[in-house]
Amino acid sequence: MARFITLAEGEQLPLWRRPVALLFVMALAMPLAFHTWSALLNNFVIEAASFDGRDIGLLHTVREIPGFLAVGVIAIILIVREQVLALVSLILLGVATALTAKFPSMAGILTLTMLSSIGFHYYETVNQSLQLQWLKKDEAPQMLGWLLAAGSGATLVAYLAIMMLWEPLGLSFDIVYLVGGGATVLIAAAAMVLYPQFEAPDPQIKRMVLRRRYWLYYALQFMSGARRQIFVVFAGFMMVEKFGYQVHEITWLYTINLVINIAVAPLLGRAVGHFGERKALAFEYVGLIGVFLCYSGVYLLGWGVLIAAVLYVIDHIFFGLALALKTYFQKIADPGDIAPTAAVAFTINHIAAVFLPFPLGLLWLVSPAAVFVLAAAMAAVSLILAMMIPRHPQKGRETIFAGPVAAAAE
Image (tube, rainbow, N blue to C red; front, side, top):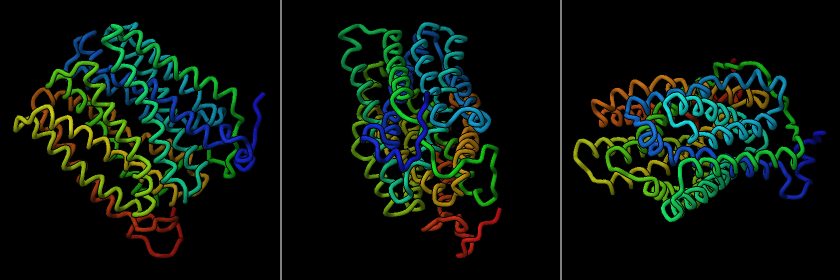
C-alpha cells in the first residue's frame, strides 16, 4: 500500500529517498529511452523505411500530437496522482522504445512513435509540474540546471555505449532500442516501489486554467515550440542527409553536446538566478538567431560539415537556457495553478509542433535554407517577447506593462 507523506516529512528521509532525489532518478531514467530513440532515429528511418524530408516531417507531426493533447493530463490527475502518472508514463516510453525496431515499416514506426510520444509528453508535463511544486523558488534555477546536467549524464552513458560498441559488436537497431527502453522501464518500476507518495503543500486545481495575466508566458511557450521543432526535426536530419553521418558519427556529435551540457547546465541555472529571466532568454534568442542564419549558410554558401557540427553544439547550449521559462512562471503563478498550467502550456507549446513539421518537410524538399531562415525569424519574435519580462517578475508584475502593485488581474 502506498505511503503518503508531506514534502517536509520527505526532507527527513535518507538523502536517496527525498523528493528531490526522485526528481533526479526520473531525470536519469527518461533520457535512456528517449535519447536512444532519437540518436538512432534518422539512420533507422532512412535505412529501414527509406524516409525522405516529407516522411520525417510526417513522423514528427505524429510524434507531437500527444504534446498537443497534453491538456488531457488535467483529466487524468483527477484519478491518478501526478507522481504515479509520471512513472507510468516513463514505463510506456520505455516499452514503446524497446519495440521500435521490431516494426520497420511506415505504419509500425508511426504507431510506436505515437505510443512513445504519449509516454514522453505526459511525463514531461507532470515532471515540470512536480519540479515547480517541489523546488523552492530561490533554489529552482540552480537545481533545474543540475537536473538538466543529470539528464545529460544519463544520455552520455547511452551514447558512449552506442558509439563504442556499435561497430565492434555489430549492434543492431533492435538490440540498442531494447536495452535503452528496457533500462527506463526498470528504473521507473523500481521508483514506484522505493519512493513514498509526496504531498505538496498547495493542492492543485484539477481543471483547465487560462488566466489573462499569464499571456506572455503562453506566447513565449508557443514560439518556443515553433522554433524548437525546426531544430529537433531538421538539424539532425541535415547531418545525415547532407553530410552522410553514420550512427556512430551522429552519436559522437551528440556525445560532445552532452559533455558540454553536463558542465554548462549548472552554470546556466546559476546565470538565470543571477541575471534574471529576461536577460537569460534574450541572450538565448539572440544566439539562436545567429545559429539558424548560419545553418542556412551551410546550404547557401556551401559551408562544410565542421561548421555544421559546431553550430549544432552551440544550438544545444542555447536551448539549455529555456529553463528560465519555468522559473519565470514559478514566480508569477498562483501555487495551485502549477499543474493545470503546465498541461495547458505544454499544449500551447505543441500547437506549432503539430502543424509545422509536415509543411516544413515539403519546404525542405524545395529549399532547406528557407526552413532555417524561418526559424531565425521565430527566434526574433521570441526575443521581442522576452524583453517584456520584468527584471523581477512576480504575481501582479508579469510583464513590464503591469504596474508596480502586486494586484493580479484575472
